[in-house]
Image 1 (cartoon, helix red, strand yellow):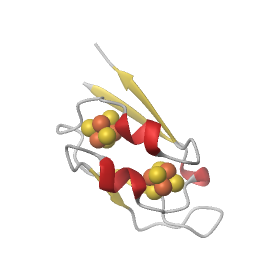
Image 2: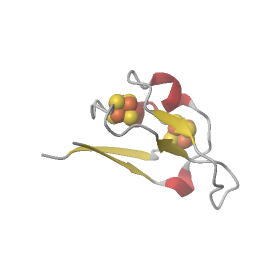
Image 3: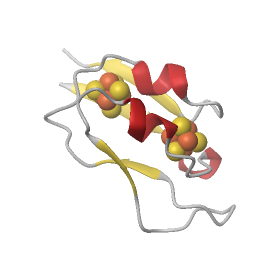
Image 4: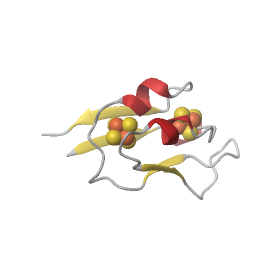
Amino acid sequence: MPKLVIREDRCKSCGICVEFCPEHCLEIGDPLNTMGYRPVVLKDEEACKSCGVCARMCPDVVLEVWKVR
Ligand code: SF4
Ligand code: SF4
């Protein structure tokens, strides 16, 4: 199972990770963070392959990807 750690308060809702996720399993969420942005959420945990593309693309180091065995 994949595990995606989202440091929500650092996310600026730029959407880069959403665009680059090859499995299309990320989206911009609804709730606001402390900076007034809407942090990204993992909408489909089953689809996430823990590839790490999102974490590498994020300019604000919001995402951390683990592979849970
Ligand atoms: S680890 Fe890969 S599959 Fe999972 S959300 Fe990030 S880019 Fe998408
Ligand atoms: S997690 Fe990073 S790349 Fe994704 S929307 Fe937030 S700031 Fe942008």
